[in-house]
Image (cartoon, rainbow, N blue to C red; front, side, top):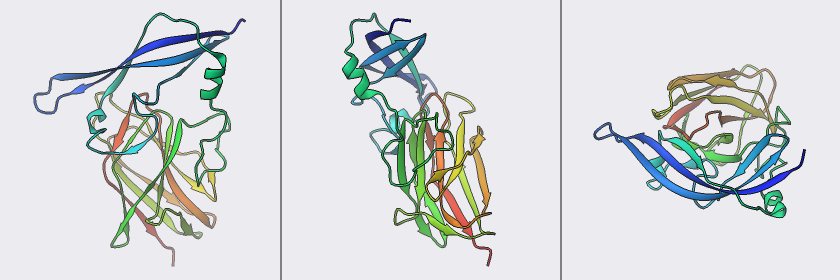
Length: 229
């Protein structure tokens, strides 16, 4: 089949509820994206200046996107440069300091970002994070590193999502051992806990994968390391 290159204008509407009066609130932004169609599949590449392109700490600037639904609308297409598309096509693991190998080589995260925790009385407090579809957020210790654990040690990560207009948003939680990402578990409830018993000594990180189509936001959580002896 002939490959078709196109340029499209997308209107992104972040739709949610106004917390004061419970009325729907819509935020509108316009972006230009490229589209490549090959044998029936379409890949869209947004203008990075107009929307979240990776997971971020929640701030006053991006807090408005918490709990919103991303609605995409398309306009008519025009010619699009193949070279410009290829520049945006991602074929390797995003540059990062921790993950060197994915559990599924066919899955390429939209981004990999690291977030430091703050230790308090032996418990690691995780920051508030807003994530995008396909993004991987890696939790680190206060120094930006992992935890050196031995057989019999345990990890518990307790989380709470911000409520979204989209119900039952999927969050995948798993671990990384010595740079290798291991397949995680799916959590679709607002609150929950991830538990891991260490069966092999090594350096560990906990990761969070947004498996929802819309931004998924997390409140402060706790990560506890229990030593076997």
